[in-house]
Length: 579
Image (cartoon, rainbow, N blue to C red; front, side, top):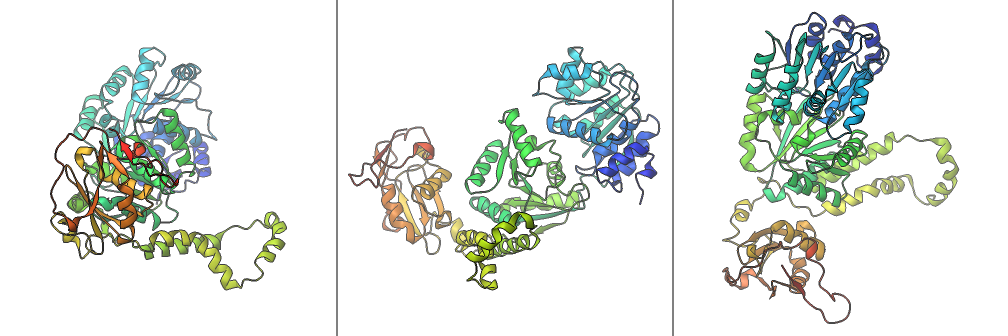
């Protein structure tokens, strides 16, 4: 195995990376650094996210900078602000014991005046997003006449994000460059065309096969019905105590909804999506980097540039269309030599997609059953026990309180103390999961029955209710479920299938909650029509109210408040829902 000394790096850089904890170079570092230090040849390095690419180009780039020369000598282009900031910070850290290199990060969303001042103060390396650098060139604030080397970091991502014109403008402006170092996880046609147009007979350095995933990552997937996906997500999270993870959603609306639900359910989570202001995005990212945030729910675009080495799990709440996107997602974990887990929560129709990804990436996917309540509680219990066992005790801080503690607990035996301490958090999970149903598809003996419930009866042991409101009234399953669980304090597990038709709906509910839900709903009116609830078995399944347009707004949310007069001792006035 090679060492960093073998690669030709100078003693000051070796001292810097040693203090950062670098011991042996990764594969991409072993391939790239000697080539980057020897001569001025263009090269393409193909390696997945998390394999150590920043050090692979950053260390030789620093070594080849003339510390006494003024002006910009090298440019590093990154797809996102976050990656731009991270790369600039890494370069500064690598060179802590070397020359005082002047590294400046320039990116959109920040004040351009200050960035211009930093460049004019003598920047030697500029780390930039393409759009902002083009802006600086047009303002004649960034002069690239003396730039010898350009690094394209995550070139495929930059092209996917629409930076092709900006990249071509920058490459065209640096006419006296000596070499281009292109780094990419994949090699789509757009990247290949750019290499052909702007690079001279580039050497190709490849780590692993095409689309192959990091070998340090374990790939798992769970199958459930669409309406059970969020419950499955919670169980997967709860069954992995101490998780520090990224949850990927397909759209920003999904991202918002999942984040809001998880926060409401008590998880330490937040969202990262395109609608966030830059200040909010920075706040969320800083919390996540500092591990003050346990779960970050993000879209693919918003997550580009996240460079956090200790992420333990990546969860795909919605499968991406492209295999390369899955590879990028999973590459957020298992970084810097660590192991990681990539989890996908899918419905049955996406299992073939999993098999396709497995064939293309040569990853070994393991299908696992969604944990049941007992399994989740067991995981949580032993996590609590482990935390107690390794808990640091600061004697001089706690000693003054021990006499009172001993006095308060003197009547408890050792066994009773252990039980009570372990039960503090365990009881919370036990109360939630005590009667949790099995949501694995193959484990449900009534699966076919549930799939055909519109023509059949309710789920086993559930009562099916009929309501005279439907799709034309703006009702959605999500909002109706929120109404029932929040307004009438019904656990989500007590509500079964919800079937919505144009003018009416059916839903299954645990018999224990039929009375409060039935009479509670009948206190409401919608569009001037009184809500009526019957047992489905007592009436024919037909749409009795097809007349009328039903208005426009949604059923539920903040407009669906508690009926006036409820619980106040007077006449109960029905809430009039005006849409």
